[in-house]
Image (cartoon, rainbow over all chains, first blue to last red; front, side):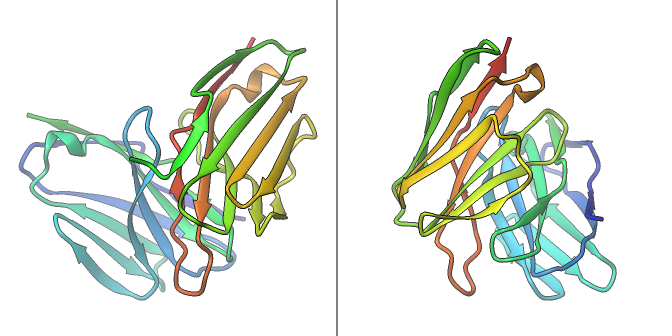
Length: 109
Length: 114
């Protein structure tokens, strides 16, 4: 079967660091995406990992371990605008993404 | 400013109505998607069109009927829906080529079936 697990909700403080984990068990793996979705808005692309390791992009970094079926999104210097849902998705084929249910991140002042 | 637009943004319909959702992409992409997003559930892929040919159909009930008249437009025709079909319907587009797999989403249509 296809399974992607993320925590349902996380809370963090403005200015701090938070790590959102994603574990997956899928038949076929061609890469892993992270998307951000603010309430009532479209999901927007954050990162795409194909190879093992850490990819850094400004305040956001994404890590992948294919052997462990594990990824995380690291957000540094949290800002109130980072309050959103973060979606993990595995690319199985050219067109098919398997999505997690998303992690709602709440930032407190 | 998103390059993918969807109309209407909100829709309330009865179970016997017929309505259509529209998606338009202004990005020159060659693939378009319909997803269903229900509260606290993963996005569910419904249909994929590549170069106006349907390439994925994930066992979606026949009361949902997609149409892709050209590479910029995608429709989802709805008829005889059920209350459990109430959800956010997201359209996405992609420029499919080797090494490029990012999907760009529209803001969605919030559908309520009464």
